[in-house]
Image (cartoon, rainbow, N blue to C red; front, side, top):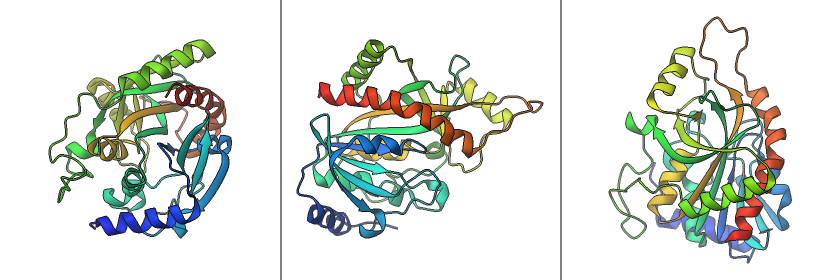
Length: 278
């Protein structure tokens, strides 16, 4: 499907009818991490089903509402849950909220996700700043920037060297250091899901240079960067990748949600600190 500018503007009009606040920061909260939105003050909550064109979250752990208010004095708009490619949505639908944020005037997007730890130095409960990514789904033919390009939003051919904003990452690292929180930096591998990876796939992804693996984030990052928005992204390591068929454990979504409870306080500390630095 192809959205028109009118489709984005219809969503913007609905949102502005619920809140006159002008957000400058957009937050995208992943599996088990929606609790971050509870820190937003003077909050207005809008169910996704009320916003024209907005994709609905069908995954347990995604509340499915937009929250607008203040966080550390910054006017923000937060997605409490997101849509995924594996839910059957086109990538243009998955990234619809990012374009709506752009038309709302958002200048900086902060994304979070739950991810499996490929790097052997990562443990459940750790956080990883994305400083790069491997877009396996895009490399194999599914990219949200495919199709007609609106030059008034961004370029046809997008450079990706400086995808993850250096100043924002420096701020996050400083906050983590002061709070004694382990914060790694690494490359995130995007796979379509919904199945978790086989042991052979885990070994392959490590060989390719991946540090964490997940089923979201990269499409939204591409669309945000296409529109010239600054991007910070953080993975919560919710499970350690299993690289042997003889392992007695199996990866499941419940452990992802359980680990999210450990990660939310750490993420809240870091993101609040970053917002204070803006």
